[in-house]
Length: 281
Image (tube, rainbow, N blue to C red; front, side):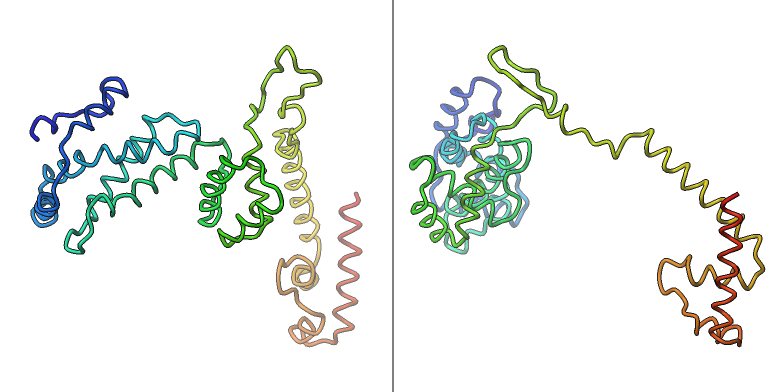
């Protein structure tokens, strides 16, 4: 076993790595429990390392089942190994379950996360339900091809999702990533890259600066106009027209200044007229 502890990940060819991990002896149930106890009770990292190394062949086996996603096997093995290490950290042998049974969930979870992050530029599945649908539908379409209505309904029923969700995920499979500023191939006619038709003029720096300057000018002009009014008229306009929330009513201001609501309305109209005259200069 000591020789296996010197195994380095991906230092040589992938085939050489796979051959070497398959030569590492498997652990008996007793050996597995003893090593797990050392790690949990004493923090023995060497024991944890032996548990990981003895199960690397299983990581390779699981990773090979995901080759159809177009990702490098070495990367899948690496992510699966991360899952195995997480499983070793949480493994409790007293529950009567072998590590290989407990670890499969963690290995697959890490591989699934890696696939979803890297299969497409834009994430194809974000919710838990979409992730489940992604992997199950991928497996089904691999054997059936493009699903007909009957097959789509059957898949939806098996996965407890709507048929429309199955169709939506299926359409995502058929779409390929496209470079934002790609150039056309020689055999492509009328090619237009997204950069030519997805322009967002709302973020044009010149337009934004112009709008900002205009807003600042209008605000400054308004403040100067308000300064020409008497204090009461200015307060009426601010409370009636310039508050973002809970604008005052005529009666609110009538109570405040102890006059009638009609008098407040007259003062408001006079102040607005004076302000408009100032702003139109």
